[in-house]
Length: 455
Image 1 (tube, rainbow, N blue to C red):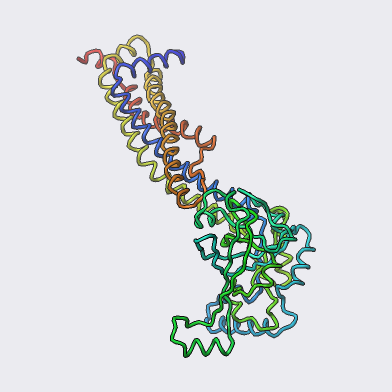
Image 2 (image 1 turned 180 degrees about the vertical axis):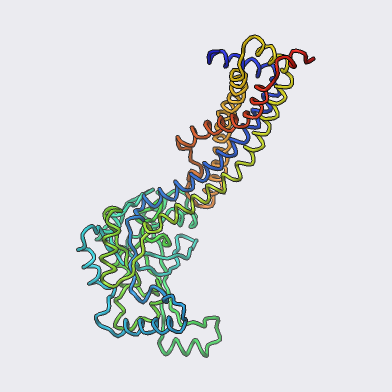
């Protein structure tokens, strides 16, 4: 028999039992649709995370900290670990040759081959006021040159210039929390930045002890005026900050610049030391050599590139979990195929006997039923893929509608790469063929003499 004959026979047999074929195929559609939707969600989350890191060049960044900021050493003997830790801190505080994160380090790091930019992690808490609304956030200190060198996707305006120290860049999410929905509306508006600073004067201490007020901490509040020059879709440098100002402006502000717990223990002569410094390399291939060079100088380093393998393992575990959940629907659908094919054999018992009596081989009978189950798998894969895409589109639209109202940016929570689309159809056909193995073997073992006598 030719392939066209098998297709004709399979199609004709499926059309005879339209309702049963529809219900069986619909079961496959549901199973494949659920599996595709879950896999697409996993791929969408992975793609979003990876794309965000690539867009803001986080894979090209190395965070450098001084040796004493890396935490206590691990050891089987807690007393020994504690002793080494205290010795390291004491040596670092008193050794003038100990590696320090200061202006000299920044100049030296910029000279390393492959380094594109070096900037200290300087943040301070502040209350930002626009109109009648206020928001508490962290303000990042960043020069105009570094701001322009980084990937800053703007929704409105521009990066600040070196000659405008009172310019400020804010994120779109902060803008929405301040009551403005359209970024262009914020350009040119005056924003008040209120900072906190330690006030250890005698007057402040006496007021804190004896005054009958709610103020029990020696903090002073200072307000400064800035003008919004740009609104960014996201602020790539230092993801915890929602606003940027220039070092010239930050230098004249009284502020509580605590970016690390170690800032409490810095001696006065170390006030110019930074808690951490970010080194941006030209491409990911420079991450390893630059890290090696910095570590040889006694600094601790951290790069997201080192965590990429762990991230991939985490994504793989998520995919396996989603696959396990989706396989429940596929298993139910495969049992439906087995049931449909077995019922078809029982109903066509005499027909199978006639085919074998006129010369059809066991292989011919098997292939006819395999084509039937494969057709169910093909239709189930195609319509299941369409169902998964439609459901994911609806979910994505609903979730984005809710998230945008809360100030979050729109994103695609589902992704349909080409291999997922083709793989879903191929997997549906494979499962259907596997489900049809037992019925086809049962059909091939039919005795034509017994079948012809069957009523």
